[in-house]
Every structure is written in C-alpha cells, then in structure tokens.
Length: 272
Image (tube, rainbow, N blue to C red):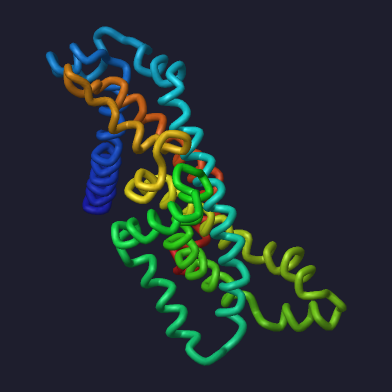
C-alpha cells in the first residue's frame, strides 16, 4: 500500500513539475508585459515591482499595433473557411471513391505540407505581383491554403472513412440529393472532424510568418511582422513586445477552448 501511495505521489509531483515547466515561459512573458524596460533590464523579479499597463495601452492605442491583430485575424479566418470548404469535397472523394492514382495524389497533397514555406515564397511573390494582389488579405489567405488544404483533407478523410457507406446509400434511397445529403446529414456526422481541421488550419495560418511577411507591406501586415519593429536606437522595447506576445496567444487559446471536445475525439480516432 505504501509503495502504491509513493508511486501516486511521484506521478502527481512529476505531472505538476511538467505543467509548471510548460507554463513558466508564458508566466514570464506575462510578468514582463507588466514591467517597464528599466525594471526588465536592471533587476530579476518574479513579479512586477512597479506594475504598469503602459505596454498594453501602447498596443491598443497605436494603429500600427492593433491593425496587425486585425489583419492577422482577417486572413486567418478567410484561410480557415476556404481551406475547410475546399477540403470537404476532396476528402469525401478520397474516402468514398477509388480512381487511378488516388493514393499517389493523396500522398502528393501531403508533400505540399511537408515542404518549407521558403520554397514557395518567390513563386507566390511573382504571381501575386502580376495580378496586383500584393499587400492584400486574400493573397495571404490563398497562399496559406497550399499547406492547410492538404492537412484538412488528411484529417477529414480519416473521419469520413469512419462513417459507414450505408448511410450514403440510405439517404439516396430516401430521395436526398447529394448536396442536401452532404450538407444536412454527412457534415453533422463529421462535425468533430470539421472542428479539428478548422483548428489546425487556424493555428498554422496564425503562426506562419515568412509568407505573410513577404506578401504584405502595410495595409495587410500581420502582427508577427509588426512585432519585429520594436527595435529602436535605444534597443528592444521588451515590455511592449511581451504584451504583444501575450495578446498573440489569446486567439489560439480561445480556439482551443471552443474545439477542445472535437480535438479529443480526433485523438481518439487517431487522426490527430
């Protein structure tokens, strides 16, 4: 009994230490966001001794800062909607039909996700320059589809393959057209998969920097690019940068909160 209790105690201590280790960088970032530069650079403190909200006020009152968050949210949401909308019929085709080269095509889609974004920066820049799409939200949203659509297809195909084909046949016998069946019945059966795919599309588009920074100048510049402008003659503005980092974490945390149940089902089905 004592051995069992010791094992439980060690497990609890190990899990607690691991959680603290994971949350420590976030806490330290939050701690820095309530300090001024002088305190950050001069002393080591576990909490702010001269608490200030000036860093957050700077972000919410400076258009060059808060517009970065707005721009990022616009193209990320656009990309999520486009990627999931395109991936749904593609994943259905891969899960329900067999055609020549289907496995090769499916693997080719995944290779686009494996390739680093730097490979596609120059082609995207030249293509969008020719069509006058540089510094627009739709340019970044479409560029991110290159790696988000394959990911969404791969996730959704796994969920769709878990739905029995008899449901499709029964719906056709009952007189459902394919669009009606797909939108009203089939999508409700794979709602967890749609939530998981939307989550990963959102997160990958939100954190991507190279393509978003290359295809934007001023009007659609994302927050990740704006954060690089904190360098001045006096050095880095650490407090504002920390506050911007905290505000950058919030959208992802909110998305995780709302789709947490779908992500859990995705892990259970082995597609996440």
